Length: 383
Image (cartoon, rainbow, N blue to C red; front, side, top):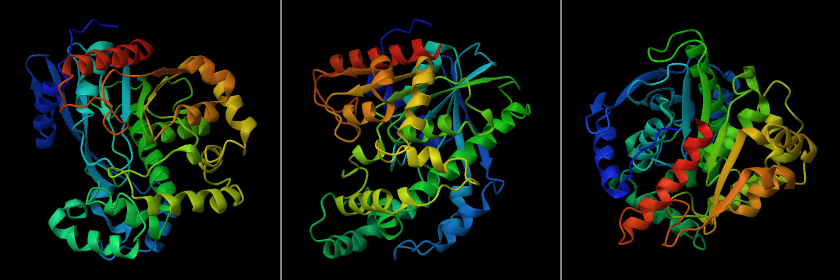
């Protein structure tokens, strides 16, 4: 691991936010880190997902079926490259649920790149970050529809502009949660195929890919490792931060993620319907996902894998994380793997799952210290 001097989280976050918002390739002079943006166009990897997306109910304010959202099938992803970077290794960084920008992750990627000497690709999950129309999150457009949802779901908590699109889409068709994840898994496989074919300008054909995954990106990563689809992550290391829980022990009810009604609708569907459907052997991600819904089902399949893979998995859980609880992570991995893989931390300042490193508070020194602690551990594991 390469030694990096202390990072000022609030200052660095603001600097990188401006750079990432422009989506223009550039060099950050003070760190000599290069940021590049690459076009990605889906090549129709999964016709079944397209059929399902076309059949989903469409919230009134969206007006477009999921399969017709062009931003989702053609988008740009950023890559952060440290000076003299290793062309034989790379880290994929996956974000959390309902995230609209790379604002908080850019500093994560830059720090990992500098500490490990490896490029970091920030890859967006389907219908997240820059893979949706901006109108889905425009307060002026949504003002009427937020009021409408509050009226129709009078007892619901946390109905906000920030989570209206995701909440409405999941309430109307909860299967969207799985199909979006499955679509992203195929997109990642396409990216890996391109790298292995020598089609990436900064990585060679034999590049070893490891993963840093946050929140719901951790669940997706666990599913990809469990599936071993195309052997693409057979020997990969996976570092999870605020992620890794069994699905039905998560709590997505948050003003930043989804409202309480959407969360109840989604949990009810997956626990009472989806879980008990026959395994689809034509879908490499079906069994892995179902094994992560409830700890009482497909237990041996799931825990046997994590026991065997425990040397290449590490997880940091935060004590005050109300979205991804420590107990849920232990339930997913099983006692043996959890004892080896999970590190539980707490910070001496106010934080949350959604904002693990708050940038607008007085305790900046403490935030900086804990940031370096977390990413020092991550970089050491992924080096």
